[in-house]
Amino acid sequence: MRDSKPILLLEDDTVDAMTVKRALKDLKVSNPLVRAGNGEEALVYLRNDNNIKPCVILLDLNMPKMNGIEFLRVAKADEKLRSIPAIVLTTSRDDQDRFQTFQLSVAGFIIKPVDYKKFVEAMRIIDVYWTLSEMPNSEQETTNANFQTNSACRR
Amino acid sequence: MRALKPILLVEDDFVDASTVKQALQDLMVRNPVVHKTDGEEAIEYLRGQNNQKPALILLDLNMPKISGVELLQVIKADTQLQHIPVVVLTVSKYEQDKVDTFDLGVAGYVIKAVDYDAFLRAMDIVIQYWVWNGCIEKERVSENARL
Image 1 (cartoon, chains in turn blue, red):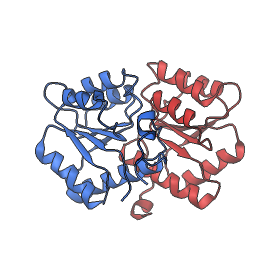
Image 2: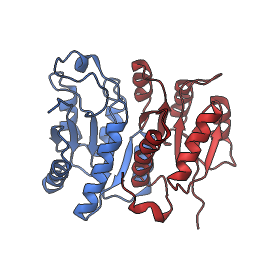
Image 3: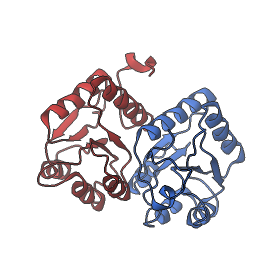
Image 4: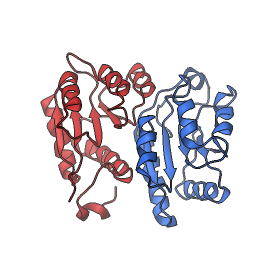
């Protein structure tokens, strides 16, 4: 198995977080999944230099303490964090949420299908797209002996 | 039926542009494609009051006059344009290009394959992703297509 960067999931709902975990497992996505229950927890994880920066951030919008949009405002203003692609995974069909998050340069806004099979298909597309897409490697990761010099999420 | 937002293709090379257009056609994308050959033309289009804002921008990096990175800087500094997702389509594997474009908030960075079949497979993934994002619509016939 190749080493790979984690996926950071911002999700306050335990059941929804388990569904994401299960879908990634069913898709044989080997990246570790790190879960934060809200934006504050995610920032603590992201700003700890002992943690490997995630390849992508998957985020819910409605969360207590610091919601998804508040989190994006902080993360996208932080030069050490803003280059990490953030994909909104939500049940919100609100055009305002969509516009506001794209205004903050999210790299996707995907409405979570309720049906599990369709949800897995959404996760599969996210996985293949972010495997195809190149990404920058920060110095931190390139100095990690175990880390692939290859740039994509997992290969 | 509401008008579909266009896909803006910014590409100085006419052969590359027609390859992208061919791939979008082969993938049965319904959105119209607007092609601009350099950054200045693209900005003029994007700021044109009568033009519909694109659903997605496919951006080449190496172009005359204004480079892809410079164009991105303009788009991401403009509150009327910064919400439009930009996907880089390039032959450049330079780390600096990836660093610069992700720093500016691109929503993908795809290396153009020389071989058309490989390019089509990559574009299929790109299109499927943006269909899930609600930016692109495809003809229904192809919905059962799998990679």
